[in-house]
Image 1 (cartoon, helix red, strand yellow):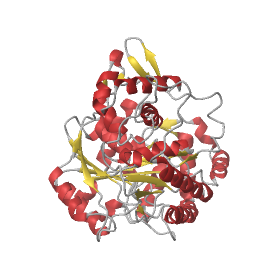
Image 2 (cartoon, rainbow, N blue to C red):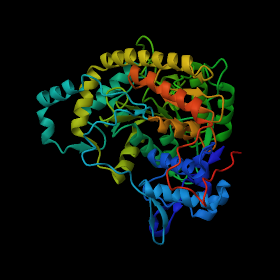
Image 3 (tube, one colour):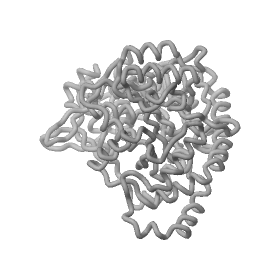
Image 4 (cartoon, rainbow, N blue to C red):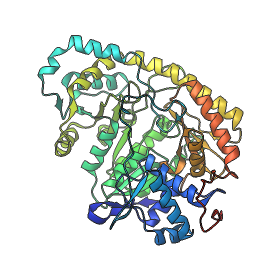
Length: 503
C-alpha cells in the first residue's frame, strides 16, 4: 500500500481542515453499543489528545461527516456540542467547529500527574537515577561551557568522538566526522526525510511502525509504501520472504527500519534478514534509516547489539545506511540529545539543510550526554534489569487476566504488540480512558483502517502500575463491549437517547 500525506488540507485563513474521509479513517472502529454521539465525541477527543488532530484544525461540516460515517446529522451535531461543552473544540464564525489546544492548568509543567491515571501511551522509562549526579559533575568539571555560544549544528567534538567510539566498540568502525548531534531522534528522522525526499518520491516504512516516522516521510509529499513485518515463521516473528519481495518491488528513495527491538513489537531481525534487506535496498539506490533508539535496551542479561550497518557486505552498502540513536529512552526523555551516523559527505549535506530550520543542539545537554556515555554500560545494565522485570510483570498479568490475547516475542525495547483476536482496538482505547488508563490503539501504527486487532502495550512503567493497568484493561475488555457510557441529564436528543446501529 502507498499513501500520501492526506491527513489534512488547508482551510480558511490557512487553518488545517480535516476532511470527512480523513476523520473517518482516523476514527477507525469507533462505534460500540453505547450512545452514538457520546462515543463519537469521546473518540474525537482521544484523537486530539494523542495529537492526531492538531489544535486549530477545522472539523468537517456536519452533513458531509454524517454521510461519511453513516450516522444521522443529529448525532454529529450533538457530538460537536459535547466537544464544545468539554472544551475540546469551539465554534468560530466563518470556520465552523475548530479544535482547541489542550488546556494546561497554571503550574501544570511542574505539578505531578493525576495519580489515579496510568499512562501506557508513552513508551519511555523514568529518568535514570544517576542523572542529577551527572549534572553536578558537569557543573563542577566543565564550567567553560558557559563561555561558549550555547548551541551548534554539528555537535561538540568530545561528544561526537564518544558516540563514534561507542559504534566502534559495538562492531562498526566509526570516525567522529561520520557523526552529527541532533536534538533527539525524532528531530533526526525529520531532518533526514526533509533533506533526502521530494514530493512524489517513493519511501518505505515497516508496518506497523513508529507513527512519527511515517509522518516525517509523508510530510515531504513522498509516497509511503509499507513493508509488512509479519507475525510468524523462522524469522523470529518476521516474514523475510514477504519483506524482501516488497523491498525489491518498491524501489524507494528512502526506507525507514527499526531492525532491533522494533516499535511496537519489540522484535529483532535476524542477521540474515538484515544483510538481505541492506543488499536489496542498496541495489536500488535507496538510503536506509536504521532507527536504533531502543537497540541497546535488551531483555535478560546485558549483551552487545551489533549495529545494523555492520551487516553491510561492502562500503557502498554501508554508506547507504543512516543510523539514528538517542539518549531519550536510555537516560531520560528530557535529555534532548540524539545523533546521526552517516557518510561524511551526507553529514555535511544534513548540516547545511539543518541550518535552514534550527540553530543546533544545546551545549549543556551535550556535556551531560558526554558524561552519560562514559557510564553507558552501567546505565544499560540497570535498564536491562529494570525492563526485564517490568516485561515479566506485564506478560504474566496479561496471561492471567487476558489469556485470549497473544503477545509479540519481544527481545528488548520498551513495548510489545498484543493481538486481541477481535477488531476492538479503537473502542477499547476509548473505554480504557473511562477506567483511568491511556493506551494507544493499533491503527496509530499503520495506515488508516489497519491493525484494529492490535494494541501496543508499553512496559516502561513500574511493575505495580503495569499490573493495575492490566486489571483496568480486563475491566474495559469484559464490561465495555455491551455497556454504554452514562447518559448525562438533559442530553436527550429529540425526546429520547439516540443510538447508532452497530454494523
